[in-house]
Picture 1 (cartoon, rainbow, N blue to C red):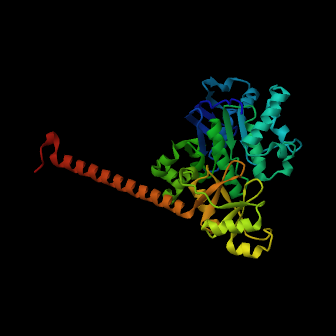
Picture 2: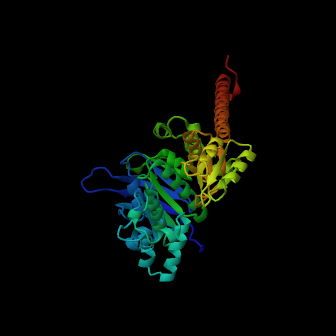
Picture 3: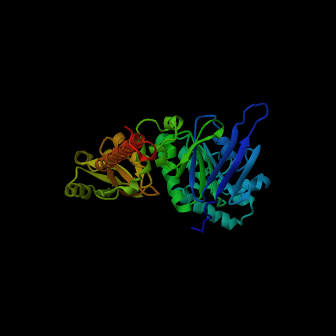
Length: 411
């Protein structure tokens, strides 16, 4: 992979937007500093101005007042078209051009800014591989030939094509099904580990914000900042009732979104492939000490869970034997994702896969439940400590009141 451009700082200074005929501003005097390489989430109720604020960063919407600086450069005075070519932008439903192939969609901005053909071709291959799509299989397809999740991956690849330091994402995963959405979120986390871009991401889903964000800006009406902090700080110390409303019940369980599968024990599991003879599969299962075995396809992706009874009924063929693997998680998935997958599958385990879907191991329900108990115990101890501190403070105040001025104890 070629040397990538890392993130840039973003500063919003007194940023405002007023629309003609509206007495109140849509965005009112927003001040914010986003660090280079940080993934910041804007979350808030519908109509609060979060998307408007995002679009002012690349001037898809022109600010009425205030300044925007990217790496110290004031972008409110430069050509907006040139600015947009330096800032990646990904939206809901990908926004791909239907008459262009996947490769042509990704190549759009590099072509506009005059990259040589060989460099563009190499960049398209690199990006398809980066977002987990086989270049040979996908580069010549049209958007209509892709699933929703695949389209969204291409949309992210297109936004990254000219290697911008900043990536803006406006509810990019809002139009896909929940399982695909989880996998796209994991993919974004993995990409950010590799690329270190500055990403500003708009969502109305607080769980998504917790999962993805280095910091979260909880926005009120007109993009007033209610709280701008780390996910853990917002979960444990919401600034006010408005922020508490976003956190909702079950803060300890929400903290499962802060812990990744890579942080817990991933165990190996007996596996076989479609190319293995049936007798060898049977022998492997019998010698494994488990009641089931994981069948991998020709690309070593989880395909079916096979139990002893399945093999007895197979009669020389695995076509109808076993249970299809409906869900997997990556190492970047959260423990909440893994727990949901385990409970949905109802079998006490979920397969962990790599960037191309290849098998890497298994996480079981016991490991996940131990993590849940640890989080809940940590929350209990934290609450107990806070209560003790409050009692000590009250005791000190009572003592001070009893002593009175000059340290003289009152009669």
